Length: 456
Image 1 (cartoon, one colour):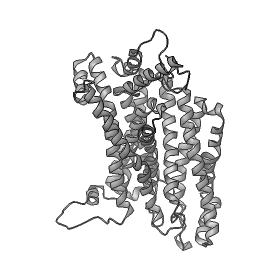
Image 2: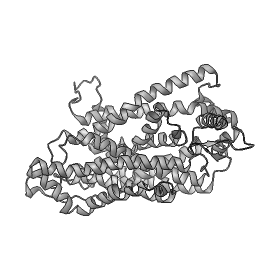
Image 3: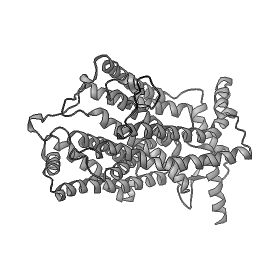
Image 4: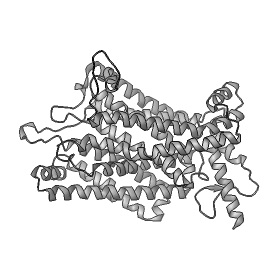
């Protein structure tokens, strides 16, 4: 299996190879009878960390949000920081799947499957935090407009309520898009599985797919329709999340550029997480022929573009505070740069503004281990960005007597780290039971490019 000679973006058939090679290599990871030891080790570590999340939630439900480091001044803390961070990570999957599909970008085919999975697992984590942050998660259904004897209706003018509908719509469309793309591969696994139980399970999810022309026509229409529905969600969901801050009168939040700032930051962090997953996956499962250096380079270019937008937003924050002449806005920026959270602020500038400039160099974009380190740094930097936005705008209010220093307690950190375990545990399960790369799209692309090469 060699890389394409004309675009170097996707694999093409080499001499003496058949299209079955694509199917065998991808499905072989799933249909193998013995689970690799490395998978058990990785899943075991992730599962143990996930137990920390469940333990933290048990303590939280038993004792209340007082176990967190919140106070009257900083009423929003880690829960909102983690919520925005996880929603942002979930954006890259929809962008790769929907927008690049509509623009007929062929390089998406090798990475769209696990990017979509990453979206669903990240949004599952994100949806947890607004529910538990209220302090009464058992009353979360009050957010839904249902007829009740209390005649209680949600406040539809609140962006906090808009989050409920935006995220629920987002996860629904993303889940449908992911499942529809899996149907032909479910049928392939059904036909290849030796175990009768496994064959029947995949057969149920294949929905009777037989590869008929009618099936393919309906599949194409459904994919394009869901892509068209998902595309505006990439912009709208994180824009709505930014309204949680922008509609307030808090200095540092009350700015009009937060929606594009949040959307670009979400794509930035989302692609960083895709690289964080793609580089180890392709190395461990020997998928370098499918996820080529060209794929990594394209993702690095998207990271560079969105990173520049984010860095520009950092500069504009300082400029707007100065140009506004508002002493409270100016103090907020000065406090970020020189106050107790100054090391956090300058760390995020370094992580999100300075280090990504290395992506201008092609050698960096095509060196997997350097890309992996940069992606990790960007993920940390984007979490610090959300922390700075939330905390430094709250911890020093108009009255100095209310000033406080917020720091997460053990339970704040344990819950956050536990969600990382939950995320990676789901990723490991996905890699074991579902094809990480879209088999039928890959074969179709291989066929297309091989014929293109013959014509030239």
